[in-house]
Image (tube, rainbow, N blue to C red; front, side, top):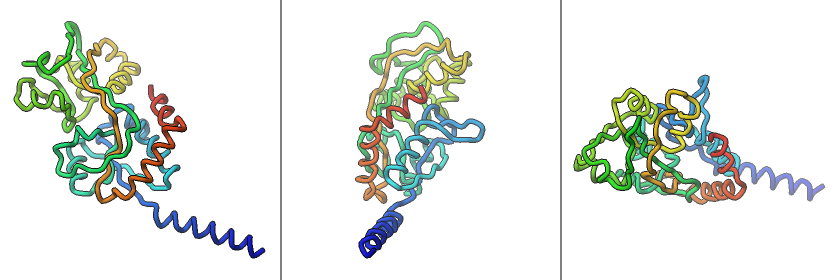
Length: 245
């Protein structure tokens, strides 16, 4: 009986310890959904990021709440410490921010493509191929290979609030080409007939993506990395991504 009570007390202490060390973290998601990463259907938010953090809650015991913001404002909020996590980010995209942040292990890859409304589409292998042309991108997104040409106005950058609106501008002929996530354009082309004539061009970026964590929460990196590694090993992340093909 004494042994049983000792075991019981150990379980209670372990549970209390976990509750004391578990934290609730604020995760930025974009105000206009960017499928398949963030999707709103029938007032319910789903998508890769939602599923990723639901699973991460199970393997780390930390809690994650979503804060909906435009991209540029999310970056400012992160700088101010009002946002703890930015998902699906690469260090090169945030090298000019006030707070660089800490990064998890890579858990997936982000692939961006140039998309054309109609022929003639053309190869884009370097910034020179787009000199003098207007290119739509999401405000706050960065493309290190092309950013110097944007800054020098050799390529005319047209900012918009989201990939959804970029696609609409492209469809209406207001833009001739845009930079957009490969998974995102495939998502729209598969589900909406009006986008099926769009022409997917060359890949303009392929990078590892990670979870960007504010330095105030850097002590949680070992937990998050362990959770992500477990999800990678178990095939959970691959299953999440495959769900939204």
